[in-house]
Image (cartoon, rainbow, N blue to C red; front, side, top):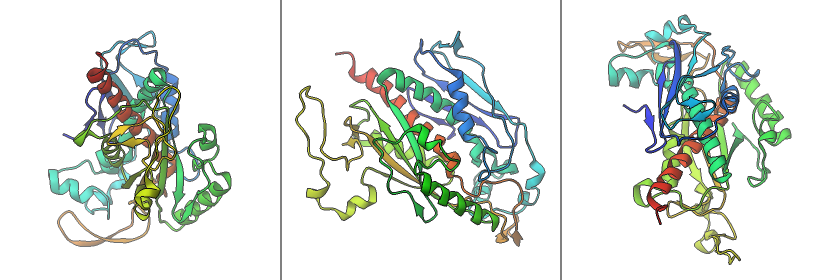
Length: 363
């Protein structure tokens, strides 16, 4: 019913924003993987609310409980169940929204589809659902790092009209990304981004932007022809995140302005016979299969749908009304979405790594 993702490395999330808790079951993780629970918690700390002045003030510790699948810190090969209890619940903040649909939110479509919905905080449509994804992604990251030294790093590239254009995807570090509250490794640009988010937030409004993500040391050969191309699965993964509105990989839409002679990635002769290209307009994927170059992708996020400004809408019975949302909401989702993007990318790569091993490693 839309709550599971992946084939061999498969995750299923559960829970609602203002219910008892949220979590995930990870099935297919290989046995005997030494797992660091603190690394999982560290990823959740990057995602949690209340972490800075430009995020929602909701206070949640988001402490993860690992219920199954581990013995003395080592995976058993059985399902890994993780849960985070909700502590700072305020369903009363959504009393008006129980009868009025929030513009550009999921309220109206959920009601039309199911005839019932968990209206407090958006239920499954809330970004709080992504706790399970981030926890599972933290496991996928550890699997990728151990298996192939693969590294997944994302950062905020643009907020509203302010874009950091001087970031080198080949050298950006996690320390630089985490060096400021907006998670942009360009410190000067980050200050302007923070000022923009605060100014828009003071007006009761919101803004969106773009997150860029790189995968370094990705194995060659991940991805399947035709329907399961690696970039197709990456697109589905990141576009399943709340508030996403666009995806591009490599040169993306800018590549449409080039000629083939400018865009083609020429192959280079190497001593060990490995695949290398002179440029990387393909973004590390050709024919739907990873070629060993750095995978580079970008995700567009819309402005947060729930704002404090008065907006025209209708009630669940179809009557016109005006809604001025209450509650605690991010004026910009991008700083907290960085670990979400990393998690979804890592889940795709972990799944395709296991699929590659299953199909192609016998001989």
